Amino acid sequence: MPATPPDIDLTTGFLNRSGGVHAAARAVADAEAKGAALAVLWLDIDRFRQINESFGHVGGDHIIAQLATRLRLALRSDSVLVRMGSDEFVALIPSLQLPMATRIGVMLLAEIERPLAIDNLLMRPSASMGLAVLEAGEDALSLLERADRAMIEAKRRGGNQLIISGDERLTGRLGVQLAREELAIEADLHSALESGCLTLEYQPLVGIDGRIEAVEALMRCDLPGRRLLPGKFIPVAEKTGMIVRLGEWSLLQGAQFAARLRDEGVPTKVAINVSRAQLTSRNFAPALQAALICANVAPALIELEFTESLFLDLSDIVQANLRSTWLAEVGIAIDDFGYGYSSLSNLKDLPASKLKLDSSFIKVLPEDRRAYAVVKAMAMLGRELGMTVIAEGVETAAQQAAVEGAAVDAVQGFFHARPMPEEAMLAWLKERTTHAP
Ligand code: C2E
Ligand code: MG
Ligand code: MG
View 1 (tube, rainbow, N blue to C red):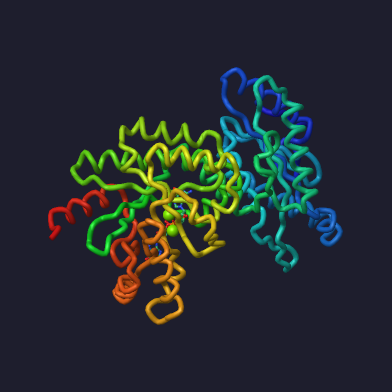
View 2 (view 1 turned 90 degrees about the vertical axis):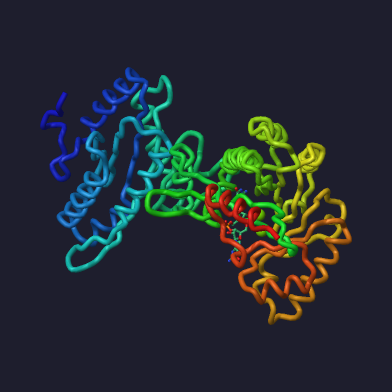
Protein backbone atom coordinates (compact mmCIF):
# COMPACT_ATOMS: atom_id res chain seq x y z
CA MET A 1 0.00 0.00 0.00
CA PRO A 2 1.57 3.35 -0.93
CA ALA A 3 2.10 5.73 1.96
CA THR A 4 -0.44 8.46 2.31
CA PRO A 5 0.88 12.03 2.34
CA PRO A 6 0.52 12.53 6.12
CA ASP A 7 3.06 9.74 6.49
CA ILE A 8 5.68 11.63 4.50
CA ASP A 9 8.41 13.87 5.91
CA LEU A 10 8.61 16.98 3.77
CA THR A 11 12.30 17.78 4.18
CA THR A 12 13.52 14.39 3.02
CA GLY A 13 10.62 12.78 1.18
CA PHE A 14 11.10 9.76 3.45
CA LEU A 15 8.36 8.23 5.58
CA ASN A 16 7.92 9.95 8.93
CA ARG A 17 8.01 8.13 12.22
CA SER A 18 4.43 6.83 12.23
CA GLY A 19 4.62 5.90 8.55
CA GLY A 20 7.90 4.16 9.31
CA VAL A 21 6.49 2.07 12.13
CA HIS A 22 3.66 0.87 9.87
CA ALA A 23 6.08 0.14 7.05
CA ALA A 24 8.27 -1.84 9.44
CA ALA A 25 5.29 -3.97 10.48
CA ARG A 26 4.47 -4.64 6.83
CA ALA A 27 8.11 -5.46 6.00
CA VAL A 28 8.32 -7.90 8.92
CA ALA A 29 5.06 -9.64 7.91
CA ASP A 30 6.33 -9.83 4.35
CA ALA A 31 9.71 -11.27 5.32
CA GLU A 32 8.05 -13.83 7.57
CA ALA A 33 5.60 -14.90 4.87
CA LYS A 34 8.42 -15.38 2.36
CA GLY A 35 10.89 -16.79 4.86
CA ALA A 36 13.23 -14.01 3.73
CA ALA A 37 15.68 -11.86 5.65
CA LEU A 38 15.16 -8.25 6.69
CA ALA A 39 17.77 -5.81 7.97
CA VAL A 40 17.20 -2.58 9.84
CA LEU A 41 19.84 0.15 9.98
CA TRP A 42 19.24 2.93 12.48
CA LEU A 43 21.33 6.04 11.96
CA ASP A 44 21.81 9.11 14.06
CA ILE A 45 23.88 12.05 12.85
CA ASP A 46 26.68 12.83 15.30
CA ARG A 47 26.77 16.29 16.95
CA PHE A 48 23.66 17.41 15.11
CA ARG A 49 22.64 19.81 17.83
CA GLN A 50 25.96 21.59 17.37
CA ILE A 51 25.35 21.68 13.60
CA ASN A 52 21.93 23.20 14.17
CA GLU A 53 23.36 25.78 16.52
CA SER A 54 26.07 26.74 14.07
CA PHE A 55 24.00 26.88 10.90
CA GLY A 56 20.49 27.54 12.21
CA HIS A 57 17.44 25.43 11.48
CA VAL A 58 17.42 26.24 7.80
CA GLY A 59 21.04 25.15 7.53
CA GLY A 60 20.24 22.08 9.61
CA ASP A 61 17.35 21.14 7.31
CA HIS A 62 19.56 21.64 4.31
CA ILE A 63 22.13 19.21 5.73
CA ILE A 64 19.43 16.65 6.58
CA ALA A 65 18.04 16.86 3.05
CA GLN A 66 21.48 16.33 1.53
CA LEU A 67 22.29 13.39 3.76
CA ALA A 68 18.86 11.92 2.94
CA THR A 69 19.70 12.14 -0.76
CA ARG A 70 22.97 10.33 -0.17
CA LEU A 71 21.13 7.54 1.65
CA ARG A 72 18.50 7.28 -1.07
CA LEU A 73 21.13 7.05 -3.82
CA ALA A 74 23.28 4.56 -1.94
CA LEU A 75 20.52 2.06 -1.18
CA ARG A 76 18.59 -0.38 -3.32
CA SER A 77 15.27 0.93 -4.55
CA ASP A 78 13.30 -1.67 -2.58
CA SER A 79 14.67 -0.26 0.69
CA VAL A 80 12.24 1.73 2.79
CA LEU A 81 13.65 4.95 4.21
CA VAL A 82 12.26 6.63 7.29
CA ARG A 83 13.06 9.86 9.08
CA MET A 84 12.57 8.78 12.67
CA GLY A 85 13.37 12.05 14.38
CA SER A 86 15.14 15.31 13.73
CA ASP A 87 18.49 13.72 12.86
CA GLU A 88 17.59 10.04 12.92
CA PHE A 89 17.02 7.79 9.94
CA VAL A 90 15.98 4.20 9.57
CA ALA A 91 16.49 2.02 6.50
CA LEU A 92 14.46 -1.19 6.18
CA ILE A 93 16.21 -3.42 3.68
CA PRO A 94 14.49 -6.64 2.60
CA SER A 95 16.31 -9.90 1.80
CA LEU A 96 19.52 -8.76 3.43
CA GLN A 97 21.56 -11.11 5.62
CA LEU A 98 24.01 -9.95 8.24
CA PRO A 99 27.28 -10.06 6.24
CA MET A 100 25.94 -7.98 3.40
CA ALA A 101 24.01 -5.71 5.79
CA THR A 102 27.24 -5.00 7.68
CA ARG A 103 28.93 -4.14 4.44
CA ILE A 104 26.15 -1.80 3.46
CA GLY A 105 26.19 -0.19 6.90
CA VAL A 106 29.90 0.50 6.55
CA MET A 107 29.37 1.82 3.05
CA LEU A 108 26.64 4.20 4.32
CA LEU A 109 28.95 5.50 7.06
CA ALA A 110 31.50 6.29 4.35
CA GLU A 111 28.83 7.98 2.22
CA ILE A 112 27.76 10.18 5.10
CA GLU A 113 31.33 11.10 5.86
CA ARG A 114 31.97 12.64 2.46
CA PRO A 115 32.55 16.38 2.87
CA LEU A 116 29.45 18.49 2.63
CA ALA A 117 29.54 22.13 1.57
CA ILE A 118 27.45 24.60 3.53
CA ASP A 119 27.84 28.39 3.73
CA ASN A 120 31.26 28.18 2.06
CA LEU A 121 32.32 25.78 4.76
CA LEU A 122 33.22 22.19 4.24
CA MET A 123 31.92 20.00 7.02
CA ARG A 124 32.47 16.31 7.56
CA PRO A 125 29.33 14.79 8.99
CA SER A 126 29.41 11.42 10.66
CA ALA A 127 26.81 9.09 12.09
CA SER A 128 26.30 6.44 14.72
CA MET A 129 24.62 3.36 13.34
CA GLY A 130 22.89 0.33 14.79
CA LEU A 131 22.12 -2.76 12.78
CA ALA A 132 19.61 -5.50 13.56
CA VAL A 133 18.58 -8.42 11.38
CA LEU A 134 15.14 -9.93 11.86
CA GLU A 135 15.10 -13.02 14.07
CA ALA A 136 12.55 -15.81 13.76
CA GLY A 137 9.25 -14.87 15.40
CA GLU A 138 10.33 -11.32 16.16
CA ASP A 139 7.91 -8.42 15.77
CA ALA A 140 8.61 -5.06 14.14
CA LEU A 141 8.86 -3.09 17.37
CA SER A 142 11.40 -5.41 18.90
CA LEU A 143 13.43 -5.32 15.68
CA LEU A 144 13.41 -1.51 15.61
CA GLU A 145 14.21 -1.37 19.29
CA ARG A 146 17.27 -3.58 18.85
CA ALA A 147 18.58 -1.43 16.00
CA ASP A 148 17.98 1.69 18.12
CA ARG A 149 19.78 0.21 21.13
CA ALA A 150 22.73 -0.75 18.95
CA MET A 151 22.82 2.82 17.58
CA ILE A 152 22.83 4.23 21.12
CA GLU A 153 25.76 1.95 21.93
CA ALA A 154 27.57 3.23 18.82
CA LYS A 155 27.01 6.80 20.07
CA ARG A 156 28.18 5.88 23.56
CA ARG A 157 31.42 4.60 22.08
CA GLY A 158 32.10 7.94 20.48
CA GLY A 159 30.02 7.80 17.30
CA ASN A 160 31.10 7.34 13.71
CA GLN A 161 30.73 3.60 13.90
CA LEU A 162 28.40 0.68 13.40
CA ILE A 163 27.24 -1.61 16.17
CA ILE A 164 25.45 -4.85 15.42
CA SER A 165 22.66 -5.91 17.72
CA GLY A 166 22.22 -9.45 18.89
CA ASP A 167 25.23 -11.66 18.77
CA GLU A 168 27.51 -8.67 19.27
CA ARG A 169 29.60 -9.51 16.28
CA LEU A 170 31.25 -6.17 16.55
CA THR A 171 32.62 -6.80 19.98
CA GLY A 172 33.32 -10.24 18.61
CA ARG A 173 33.15 -13.56 20.28
CA LEU A 174 36.52 -12.85 21.80
CA GLY A 175 35.26 -9.58 23.28
CA VAL A 176 37.41 -7.28 21.16
CA GLN A 177 36.24 -4.13 19.52
CA LEU A 178 36.84 -3.78 15.81
CA ALA A 179 37.75 -0.49 14.20
CA ARG A 180 35.79 0.63 11.16
CA GLU A 181 38.30 -0.68 8.63
CA GLU A 182 38.36 -4.03 10.38
CA LEU A 183 34.59 -4.19 10.29
CA ALA A 184 34.63 -3.64 6.55
CA ILE A 185 37.24 -6.38 6.20
CA GLU A 186 35.12 -8.71 8.30
CA ALA A 187 32.14 -8.10 6.06
CA ASP A 188 34.33 -8.62 2.99
CA LEU A 189 35.53 -11.91 4.39
CA HIS A 190 32.02 -13.14 5.07
CA SER A 191 30.93 -12.43 1.56
CA ALA A 192 34.15 -13.84 0.09
CA LEU A 193 33.52 -17.10 1.94
CA GLU A 194 29.97 -17.22 0.64
CA SER A 195 30.71 -16.25 -2.93
CA GLY A 196 33.80 -18.40 -3.39
CA CYS A 197 36.22 -15.47 -3.67
CA LEU A 198 38.71 -17.12 -1.33
CA THR A 199 41.51 -19.03 -2.98
CA LEU A 200 44.87 -20.46 -2.11
CA GLU A 201 48.05 -19.62 -3.96
CA TYR A 202 51.12 -21.80 -3.66
CA GLN A 203 54.81 -21.01 -3.39
CA PRO A 204 57.57 -23.63 -3.61
CA LEU A 205 60.25 -24.29 -1.00
CA VAL A 206 63.30 -25.21 -3.04
CA GLY A 207 66.10 -27.36 -1.63
CA ILE A 208 69.71 -26.22 -2.06
CA ASP A 209 70.12 -29.40 -4.12
CA GLY A 210 67.20 -28.34 -6.34
CA ARG A 211 64.65 -30.76 -4.90
CA ILE A 212 61.24 -29.35 -4.14
CA GLU A 213 60.83 -29.55 -0.40
CA ALA A 214 57.15 -28.52 -0.30
CA VAL A 215 54.73 -25.91 -1.56
CA GLU A 216 53.19 -23.48 0.90
CA ALA A 217 49.49 -22.64 0.65
CA LEU A 218 48.84 -18.89 1.04
CA MET A 219 45.31 -17.57 1.34
CA ARG A 220 44.01 -14.91 -1.04
CA CYS A 221 40.75 -13.00 -0.88
CA ASP A 222 39.81 -11.55 -4.25
CA LEU A 223 36.93 -9.13 -4.23
CA PRO A 224 35.64 -7.44 -7.34
CA GLY A 225 38.46 -5.18 -8.48
CA ARG A 226 40.78 -5.65 -5.52
CA ARG A 227 42.74 -8.21 -3.61
CA LEU A 228 42.96 -8.37 0.16
CA LEU A 229 46.24 -9.82 1.41
CA PRO A 230 46.49 -12.07 4.44
CA GLY A 231 48.48 -9.48 6.37
CA LYS A 232 45.26 -7.42 6.41
CA PHE A 233 42.55 -10.01 6.81
CA ILE A 234 44.13 -12.77 8.93
CA PRO A 235 44.43 -10.51 12.01
CA VAL A 236 40.74 -9.53 11.66
CA ALA A 237 39.72 -13.14 11.15
CA GLU A 238 41.70 -14.01 14.27
CA LYS A 239 40.00 -11.31 16.34
CA THR A 240 36.50 -12.32 15.32
CA GLY A 241 37.05 -16.05 15.54
CA MET A 242 36.36 -16.41 11.82
CA ILE A 243 39.86 -17.82 11.39
CA VAL A 244 38.57 -21.18 12.59
CA ARG A 245 36.25 -21.47 9.59
CA LEU A 246 38.84 -20.06 7.19
CA GLY A 247 41.45 -22.40 8.62
CA GLU A 248 39.26 -25.46 8.17
CA TRP A 249 38.63 -24.35 4.62
CA SER A 250 42.35 -23.98 3.84
CA LEU A 251 43.13 -27.34 5.47
CA LEU A 252 40.68 -29.05 3.18
CA GLN A 253 41.70 -27.10 0.05
CA GLY A 254 45.38 -27.67 0.73
CA ALA A 255 44.86 -31.38 1.33
CA GLN A 256 42.88 -31.65 -1.91
CA PHE A 257 45.69 -29.95 -3.80
CA ALA A 258 48.19 -32.42 -2.31
CA ALA A 259 45.99 -35.26 -3.59
CA ARG A 260 45.82 -33.63 -6.99
CA LEU A 261 49.63 -33.22 -7.22
CA ARG A 262 50.00 -36.90 -6.34
CA ASP A 263 47.46 -37.91 -8.98
CA GLU A 264 49.16 -35.72 -11.60
CA GLY A 265 52.46 -37.52 -10.98
CA VAL A 266 54.22 -34.74 -9.07
CA PRO A 267 53.71 -35.77 -5.43
CA THR A 268 54.73 -32.81 -3.26
CA LYS A 269 54.14 -31.90 0.34
CA VAL A 270 51.65 -29.06 0.87
CA ALA A 271 52.36 -26.79 3.83
CA ILE A 272 49.32 -25.12 5.39
CA ASN A 273 49.42 -22.21 7.83
CA VAL A 274 47.56 -22.66 11.09
CA SER A 275 46.82 -19.85 13.50
CA ARG A 276 46.61 -19.80 17.21
CA ALA A 277 42.81 -19.69 17.42
CA GLN A 278 42.66 -22.96 15.48
CA LEU A 279 45.15 -24.70 17.68
CA THR A 280 43.30 -23.68 20.83
CA SER A 281 40.05 -25.15 19.51
CA ARG A 282 38.78 -28.60 20.47
CA ASN A 283 37.64 -28.99 16.92
CA PHE A 284 41.16 -28.85 15.53
CA ALA A 285 42.08 -32.54 15.53
CA PRO A 286 38.72 -33.66 14.06
CA ALA A 287 38.98 -30.98 11.36
CA LEU A 288 42.47 -32.16 10.44
CA GLN A 289 41.31 -35.78 10.27
CA ALA A 290 38.29 -34.77 8.22
CA ALA A 291 40.48 -32.91 5.73
CA LEU A 292 42.80 -35.91 5.32
CA ILE A 293 39.90 -38.30 4.85
CA CYS A 294 37.87 -36.08 2.50
CA ALA A 295 40.88 -35.37 0.32
CA ASN A 296 42.03 -38.98 0.53
CA VAL A 297 45.63 -37.98 1.06
CA ALA A 298 48.44 -39.49 3.10
CA PRO A 299 49.45 -37.44 6.15
CA ALA A 300 53.04 -37.49 4.93
CA LEU A 301 51.97 -35.15 2.13
CA ILE A 302 50.72 -32.51 4.57
CA GLU A 303 52.67 -30.18 6.77
CA LEU A 304 51.29 -27.61 9.18
CA GLU A 305 53.05 -24.30 9.80
CA PHE A 306 52.71 -22.78 13.25
CA THR A 307 54.29 -19.47 14.16
CA GLU A 308 56.64 -19.67 17.04
CA SER A 309 54.51 -17.39 19.22
CA LEU A 310 52.06 -20.25 19.34
CA PHE A 311 54.47 -22.18 21.42
CA LEU A 312 54.78 -19.57 24.12
CA ASP A 313 51.78 -20.73 26.00
CA LEU A 314 51.54 -24.45 25.69
CA SER A 315 48.13 -24.89 27.27
CA ASP A 316 46.71 -28.39 27.66
CA ILE A 317 44.55 -28.03 24.60
CA VAL A 318 47.41 -26.72 22.43
CA GLN A 319 49.60 -29.59 23.61
CA ALA A 320 46.86 -32.11 22.91
CA ASN A 321 46.35 -30.70 19.40
CA LEU A 322 50.09 -30.73 18.68
CA ARG A 323 50.26 -34.29 19.94
CA SER A 324 47.42 -35.44 17.73
CA THR A 325 49.01 -33.73 14.71
CA TRP A 326 52.22 -35.55 15.46
CA LEU A 327 50.47 -38.87 16.08
CA ALA A 328 48.62 -38.47 12.79
CA GLU A 329 52.09 -38.23 11.20
CA VAL A 330 51.37 -34.83 9.74
CA GLY A 331 54.54 -32.73 9.52
CA ILE A 332 55.01 -29.74 11.81
CA ALA A 333 56.99 -26.64 10.81
CA ILE A 334 57.88 -23.64 12.97
CA ASP A 335 57.18 -20.55 10.88
CA ASP A 336 58.82 -17.11 11.10
CA PHE A 337 61.39 -18.39 13.57
CA GLY A 338 63.44 -15.71 15.27
CA TYR A 339 60.97 -12.92 14.63
CA GLY A 340 59.04 -12.82 17.86
CA TYR A 341 59.85 -14.42 21.12
CA SER A 342 62.02 -17.30 20.15
CA SER A 343 62.13 -19.58 23.06
CA LEU A 344 64.94 -22.04 22.86
CA SER A 345 63.61 -24.00 25.80
CA ASN A 346 60.38 -24.61 23.90
CA LEU A 347 62.20 -25.36 20.69
CA LYS A 348 63.94 -28.41 22.08
CA ASP A 349 60.65 -29.94 23.22
CA LEU A 350 58.60 -29.33 20.09
CA PRO A 351 57.79 -32.21 17.78
CA ALA A 352 58.62 -30.05 14.73
CA SER A 353 60.62 -31.34 11.79
CA LYS A 354 61.12 -28.05 10.00
CA LEU A 355 62.39 -24.63 11.06
CA LYS A 356 61.62 -21.64 8.84
CA LEU A 357 63.93 -18.70 9.53
CA ASP A 358 62.09 -15.41 9.39
CA SER A 359 62.63 -13.23 6.33
CA SER A 360 63.79 -10.29 8.47
CA PHE A 361 67.16 -12.02 8.85
CA ILE A 362 67.39 -12.75 5.14
CA LYS A 363 66.44 -9.39 3.69
CA VAL A 364 69.53 -7.71 5.18
CA LEU A 365 71.86 -10.29 3.60
CA PRO A 366 74.54 -10.45 2.35
CA GLU A 367 75.70 -7.06 3.73
CA ASP A 368 74.72 -7.57 7.35
CA ARG A 369 77.39 -9.90 8.71
CA ARG A 370 75.80 -10.12 12.14
CA ALA A 371 72.52 -11.29 10.63
CA TYR A 372 74.54 -13.76 8.61
CA ALA A 373 76.13 -15.09 11.79
CA VAL A 374 72.70 -15.52 13.36
CA VAL A 375 71.35 -17.34 10.30
CA LYS A 376 74.34 -19.63 10.27
CA ALA A 377 73.99 -20.41 13.97
CA MET A 378 70.23 -20.99 13.70
CA ALA A 379 70.80 -23.31 10.74
CA MET A 380 73.24 -25.31 12.80
CA LEU A 381 70.91 -25.37 15.80
CA GLY A 382 68.00 -26.57 13.68
CA ARG A 383 70.08 -29.27 12.11
CA GLU A 384 71.37 -30.47 15.47
CA LEU A 385 67.77 -30.78 16.58
CA GLY A 386 67.06 -32.92 13.53
CA MET A 387 65.07 -30.29 11.64
CA THR A 388 65.14 -29.19 8.04
CA VAL A 389 66.05 -25.50 7.97
CA ILE A 390 64.43 -23.11 5.50
CA ALA A 391 65.35 -19.49 4.74
CA GLU A 392 62.25 -17.40 4.02
CA GLY A 393 62.09 -14.40 1.72
CA VAL A 394 65.11 -14.97 -0.53
CA GLU A 395 64.75 -12.43 -3.32
CA THR A 396 68.17 -12.13 -4.96
CA ALA A 397 71.00 -14.32 -6.18
CA ALA A 398 73.26 -12.72 -3.57
CA GLN A 399 70.86 -13.71 -0.81
CA GLN A 400 70.64 -17.20 -2.25
CA ALA A 401 74.44 -17.49 -2.17
CA ALA A 402 74.52 -16.16 1.40
CA VAL A 403 72.00 -18.65 2.75
CA GLU A 404 73.77 -21.46 0.93
CA GLY A 405 76.94 -20.31 2.70
CA ALA A 406 75.06 -20.42 5.98
CA ALA A 407 74.16 -24.03 5.15
CA VAL A 408 70.39 -23.89 5.25
CA ASP A 409 68.64 -26.85 3.63
CA ALA A 410 66.13 -25.04 1.45
CA VAL A 411 64.83 -21.60 0.55
CA GLN A 412 61.52 -19.96 -0.16
CA GLY A 413 61.26 -16.62 -1.90
CA PHE A 414 60.65 -14.55 -4.98
CA PHE A 415 64.13 -15.51 -6.25
CA HIS A 416 62.75 -18.95 -7.11
CA ALA A 417 59.06 -18.25 -7.55
CA ARG A 418 56.32 -15.97 -6.35
CA PRO A 419 53.14 -17.46 -4.91
CA MET A 420 50.94 -18.57 -7.82
CA PRO A 421 47.49 -20.01 -8.48
CA GLU A 422 46.91 -23.74 -8.31
CA GLU A 423 47.10 -24.39 -12.07
CA ALA A 424 50.32 -22.43 -12.45
CA MET A 425 51.87 -24.26 -9.50
CA LEU A 426 51.00 -27.59 -11.03
CA ALA A 427 52.50 -26.59 -14.39
CA TRP A 428 55.63 -25.24 -12.65
CA LEU A 429 56.16 -28.52 -10.80
CA LYS A 430 55.63 -30.61 -13.95
CA GLU A 431 58.07 -28.46 -15.87
CA ARG A 432 60.73 -28.90 -13.16
CA THR A 433 60.32 -32.65 -13.03
CA THR A 434 60.72 -33.05 -16.77
CA HIS A 435 63.83 -30.85 -16.76
CA ALA A 436 65.27 -32.18 -13.54
CA PRO A 437 68.97 -33.01 -13.74
P1 C2E B 1 54.10 -16.85 6.03
O1 C2E B 1 53.47 -18.12 6.42
O2 C2E B 1 55.44 -16.55 6.64
O3 C2E B 1 54.17 -16.85 4.44
C1 C2E B 1 55.20 -16.29 3.68
C2 C2E B 1 54.87 -14.90 3.23
O4 C2E B 1 56.01 -14.31 2.63
C3 C2E B 1 53.78 -14.87 2.14
O5 C2E B 1 53.06 -13.65 2.30
C4 C2E B 1 54.60 -14.80 0.87
O6 C2E B 1 53.90 -14.25 -0.23
C5 C2E B 1 55.73 -13.89 1.30
N1 C2E B 1 56.94 -14.08 0.53
C6 C2E B 1 57.45 -15.20 0.03
N2 C2E B 1 58.62 -14.99 -0.59
C7 C2E B 1 58.89 -13.67 -0.46
C8 C2E B 1 59.96 -12.81 -0.89
O7 C2E B 1 60.93 -13.22 -1.53
N3 C2E B 1 59.86 -11.50 -0.59
C9 C2E B 1 58.81 -11.00 0.10
N4 C2E B 1 58.79 -9.68 0.35
N5 C2E B 1 57.77 -11.77 0.53
C10 C2E B 1 57.82 -13.09 0.25
P2 C2E B 1 51.49 -13.60 2.27
O8 C2E B 1 50.97 -14.58 1.28
O9 C2E B 1 51.11 -12.17 2.16
O10 C2E B 1 51.09 -14.15 3.70
C11 C2E B 1 51.43 -13.47 4.87
C12 C2E B 1 51.17 -14.30 6.10
O11 C2E B 1 49.76 -14.53 6.26
C13 C2E B 1 51.78 -15.68 6.05
O12 C2E B 1 53.14 -15.60 6.38
C14 C2E B 1 50.94 -16.42 7.08
O13 C2E B 1 51.42 -16.13 8.38
C15 C2E B 1 49.57 -15.76 6.90
N6 C2E B 1 48.74 -16.65 6.11
C16 C2E B 1 48.67 -16.80 4.77
N7 C2E B 1 47.75 -17.73 4.43
C17 C2E B 1 47.24 -18.21 5.59
C18 C2E B 1 46.26 -19.21 5.93
O14 C2E B 1 45.69 -19.91 5.06
N8 C2E B 1 45.99 -19.40 7.26
C19 C2E B 1 46.64 -18.68 8.23
N9 C2E B 1 46.33 -18.91 9.51
N10 C2E B 1 47.56 -17.75 7.95
C20 C2E B 1 47.86 -17.52 6.65
MG1 MG C 1 53.88 -19.93 6.57
MG1 MG D 1 56.81 -17.49 7.30
